[in-house]
Length: 260
Image (tube, rainbow, N blue to C red; front, side):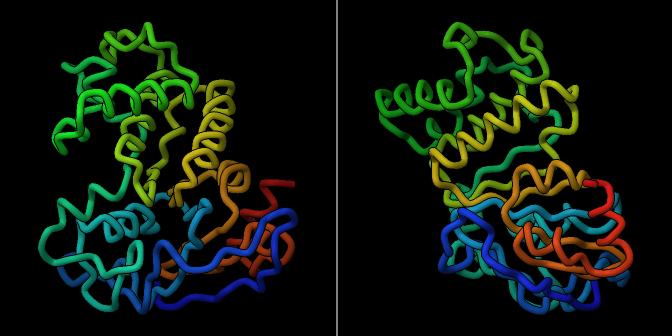
């Protein structure tokens, strides 16, 4: 990603202005064994909203997400998350401020629903009554019946597994939620139901979210801000309505056409 071209952004109808950024990339570059995935990448994600990073497979979307949670380090430039640079030390404590949900839910198969969801709270030594209250709150938010609490992942439907994965990601009340194509492994009807559950939970929690997806329809449905990547660069970034109204020529315009 050898540069970025910012879309001309106008306020999305009904969306209040947001001050500050939950994630900020400034002239970031990353390479593996000398092969650059991208260079000079700069974009910001507004606090309190969902930003979608959209691009085809191999475009570096997941690498960007891994730079946000400190799994990878940039070779150049800086990444700021929740108002501070990703730390060199104490990264585990830093990650506890970030929720993470992935394709296929990533649940521990030997743990029950309750054990999967409240694992981090137990590691953080939350009081038992606080854990139980938060667990019940999240089940209600995600439309999961309490009778599922003692089931194991293999006893759940795909949609239920994804909901449990989102509950686990939200357990510690993170300031930022990272989503790596979490809805792509379920059927279309279940996916639409998950979208509505996610929108409800995101608004209720007030959490900022960064969603990686190759599906433009999903991005438009869930995100108020878009970052379109391809050919080693940020092709366009801006509010969803602005990108859809005036897409950059080429790849972005073709993506937008899939919505028509």
